[in-house]
Figure 1 (spheres, rainbow, N blue to C red):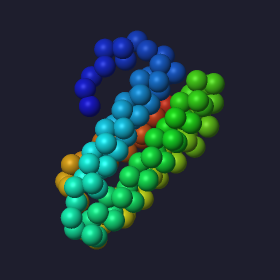
Figure 2: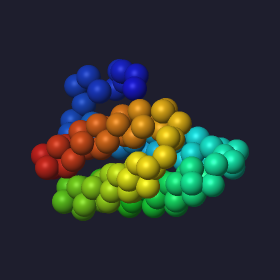
Figure 3: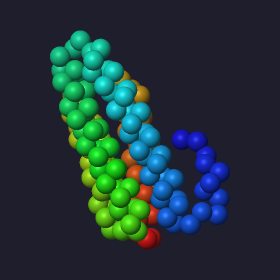
Figure 4: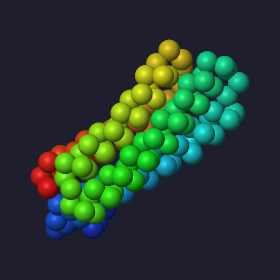
Length: 127
């Protein structure tokens, strides 16, 4: 994740907006990557895991869209609930890949996403 110059001097809602945008971008990039892996994969077990992850990532993106609505309306508890739901999608994906050897970048991307979402959860508790 790169530094964002807009963060300096930003209020809580602006920080949440910037961080949520980063999470949405991360989830979209991950979805594109996992869709590509699912399409190309020939190992049936791994393909099944990737295909399941595609659905989880779609749910994650939907939850983040709903989180954005909560953020826009100033609903900190709603933001927290929706971001937590988004994190669950990523966790479920990783659980589905635990018995196979997925592309290592998927594991790294998930860790980064979870960290960004953790920051949003802290911010949501301050709203």
